[in-house]
Amino acid sequence: MEGVVRRVGLGLAARGEVRKAVEYARQAADLGLDSVWIHDSYFERDAVTFLTAVAAEVPDIKIGAGALNPYTRHPVVLAMTFSALDDLAPGRFILALGSGLPLRLAQMGIDYGDTVARVSECIDILRELWAGRRLVLNPNVPPLQPMFPPPHRIPIYIAGYQPRFLELCGRKADGYLARPAESVQAVVQIRRRIEAAARTAGRTLEQIQFAGYLLCLIDESRRAALNRAKREPFVIYMVSVLSNLSLRRAGFPPELRDQVAAAWRAEDYHRAAELIPDELLDAFILCGTPEDVARRAWQYHRAGMDLPILQPIVQSEEQTRLVLEAAAIYSRAPRLEAEPAQAAVFGGVGVPAGPPAAELSLPERARRKAAGIWEILRPFSFTASFIPITAGGMLALLDGRFNLPLFAASLLGGLALQAGTNVINEIYDVRKGVDQITSPRASHALLKGALTEKEAFGVAFSAFALATLVGLYLVAVRGLPLLLLGLVGLAGGYFYTTAPPFEYKFRALGVPLVFVLMGPLMVFGTYLAVTGEPSLLALLV
Image (cartoon, rainbow, N blue to C red):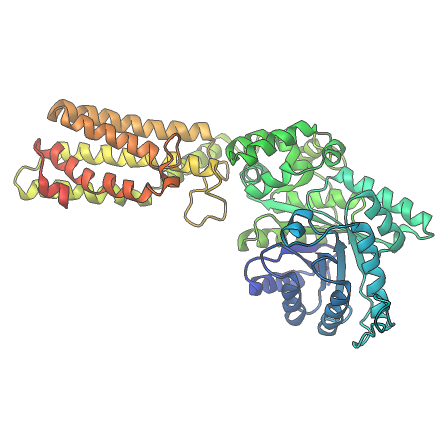
């Protein structure tokens, strides 16, 4: 396509709607991307079905199956499958073969043996069958005769990072597919190993294409993207399973990974996020604006990656659109050298070197902080307090005993109590991983880093303090019975959510508790505060 100066691909997981994946592939083709890659996502949806839909619906783009494995799909089945796929999209398919994940295979009752030998044998079987040759896999029965027409040449890539896989790639494969969350330093080392193996086999590195998945999270600034990435459970998981070799190549101690992994296993996602430094994310994940991500992809290209494959960490429409925007910038920009501020962060060929300078002006930071506070307060939900308090006030009005100042104080105290409850709920939902960036009704103030947890606690306790002051005023006017109701309200507001030690939400008591606190007790308490006397009718309304 005119204007494209370098190749780039889009990576997708086999999850979500097949039609959405087809639409993303169509957008990638329209932008002139080289290829779209879809990989197995165990126990989600079948990758080959996604590949078939893309092949049938989207012309003019290569399609990468990466990675599949010879355990869940026998080599003969793979040969048959890709013969049919090649008929749909002649000459457009690439097949990447990996070992599969031992845990997932064990869950399916599949034996895991010598993975390198198994993948090597799979390559031989595929090439023999695609050439139309008979194959003897069992000497006790007649040879296997392929009944399908030989497909166009289908390149076979290796998707395995162990040294023996790299040797196999240099000796036999058409390309290498790097796994997600590899550092630039790892790309350099892997390429050198493959080159050495290729020379030993009498081949050159020019005969082997080097591709790799690059996980991306994009936001309006690098700071916002980093904050958001640290709170994504998938990112925390990826950090917790980084190998010692990967960490040492990037200049990080394995002990850091161990601390993150311990927090992840304890489901303390907030603690895990706090443990992950910016520099660690920069080493393994592309975070920032679309321009930042394009520049980081260029760092991988300079290290020897012929085809960066940009994959959204969160496969939402918004993130996929932004990743496609970054891919378009990468593929078309004549120059992609890091800007001065980024060069200080990424240090030459992708080496992290300290935190970024402040990116926003003081007024802009203040505006965003105020927007974060407004978002985490969730004012749209205040009707849950406004309605029962108003009901209690209207009952007092019907009885001819309405007192406007006391009603206004009750309303202010009730709204402040709910505001504090909303914020505490947000804090502990994020800590527990209940709220994620794709949660449709969640506030994203903490997830996106608009507020720190410390600031959120400050907002919550300020709201509770206001509710307490109003409550003390009402107690002074109407007496001690209101004190008991106030204490119940404060305790219920704090502990109704996932806040320890009671964690009512996880004990199937959240909804009943909300009903009691924001139903009968609010109506009854308002009537008592306004009139000074209890009312059975107010309790039953």
